[in-house]
Length: 322
Image 1 (cartoon, rainbow, N blue to C red):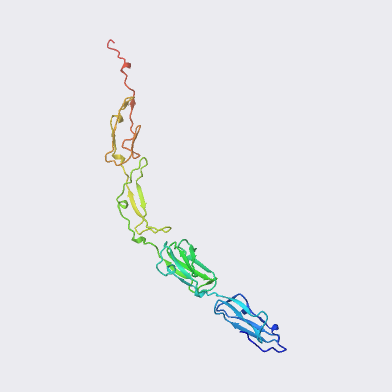
Image 2 (image 1 turned 180 degrees about the vertical axis):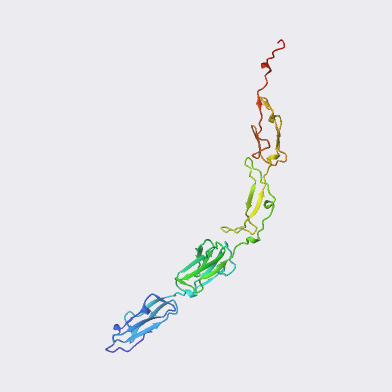
């Protein structure tokens, strides 16, 4: 439809009217943010105009003087969705006040569907004492979904206090910082250790010749653990005594081969070693030492004299008239 207007007078000059201001710029405008512009004619008459965009769609402003568009009119502007950090929502088990366990993966969701334009920033820190003497950053994975939401996954590396920061367009959202508490994933006080291996009356190590373990006091520590984090149960350390697996003093070695009166050179001989009641160990005989489990048996090493073999052909008898 065309609009028919009366012809202007002689002193009518719409081409000399100017409109300017941020409200007429093609970019930089956002929903919910008031803006303005100024209209000025050649006769020093000025008009201040303002408006507030309500939807993130293209806007058109027409400025006419006496029904005739001034230069550059109509003005077309792109209206952005704006930035609204206060409309960002954070939810999920990963930001719950209770129920979080150390070493158990968790997650939370950041909803930016109504927040307008802006980038999301996430930070997770643990308090001193969780993984070291100082506050530390925690690794996490962030996944962008199709509905302007983000899923943040992380695994608490230990029990203690954590702080989660969420920023939108470099501005902290109202609900942050989010402070959570992570509980231990186990209770060492409920662990029980028992059995013959913890007997205070003594234990026998299994013999492993030729280097059997030595009898001594041993310290046994039993822990119910999770990766990277250890906690001793209440009854530890448990101190036990391990007895020898053998007793060389109960070994008997006897026979003509050990006679203190001596044996004859190059003449076979023998002796007997009785280990009954001496436990389990390796028997070793060397000239003339007898060891059991690496320990000398009684009287070992044996001092045995060796005499030359008697040769009757070399005996000379004299006297008695030969």
